[in-house]
Length: 256
Image (spheres, helix red, strand yellow):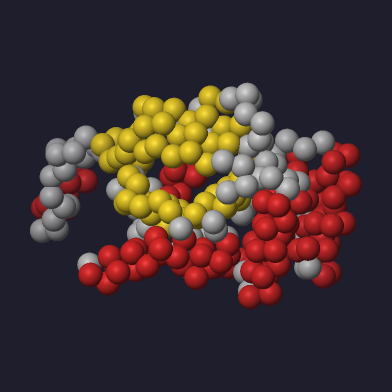
């Protein structure tokens, strides 16, 4: 992934992006032979050499946009987000990113289960490129937003999934970059957290950032996003007004 710093604000430009996962099945393997001898089928022979997780996709996202990625499981939403973040390398095409990214994918990334929540704020901040001084300046705001009470000074192995979400979101958004990439974090939080998280993301966008959000809750996506992109098979099906795209998507799912 290359970076372009000419633009006056955060921007993402995706040009004919291609990401292929190779498929390998050895029909003569010992495992296949054993299953065959026991009368179990190991599945049909796969002639395809690769799965096109992102398939010739082009997309431009500009400063101030909140873009939601929707589609069925396996449509390429999370893969695209991680490709933009530079986690997965492209097979072909290009992605140009202007601005510093913050990704909220795996809520355990940068967290130590035996360390306290307070200690993990420092660990997580350091892992995403902030200085100790920058983290200390925001630590109390992060703790207040996460609202974990006495658990902030307990080891994170004692936390529930929702508590991980709250602390991970607080760190990733209070130590903010220009571009926030969020993958399915709202499902684990309660209604109060979701409301505060939406307000927080709106504050980020008001300060001229970009949000890219993957989710399945269409009502939430429509309330948060200014634009929905429907993906299927790693390709774009529709891109436009959230409610219009959601309506077409729902009709398609019902027809299917």
